[in-house]
Image 1 (tube, helix red, strand yellow):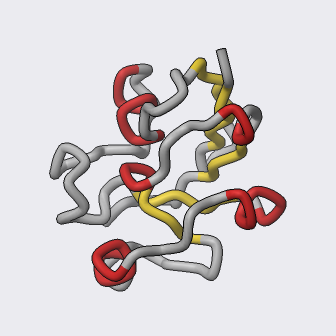
Image 2 (spheres, rainbow, N blue to C red):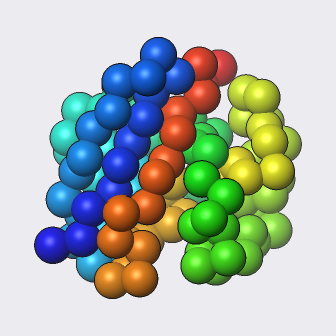
Image 3 (cartoon, rainbow, N blue to C red):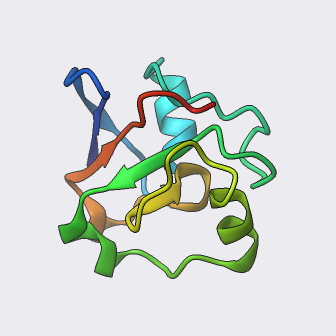
Length: 106
């Protein structure tokens, strides 16, 4: 099964099995990764699943949609590599993806 690596702002690192087709917010909350809240349940109406995608993975992701872009404007400390983990699904190509968590989602 493909894996995602979540790295908290304090450096704690978690390697999680993620089923192909599952979004990274669901995988994080199911595995109790602190820092991913997913307040809206994954419908892209909040920014509490904000992550920083390591740059080498960005080209493998689908482009940011209009709704996600609007929500990222509300995220805490957005960067060029910011994404909402509810909008990103695991694929075989993303095995080993590194997702860094912000200091806070608020």
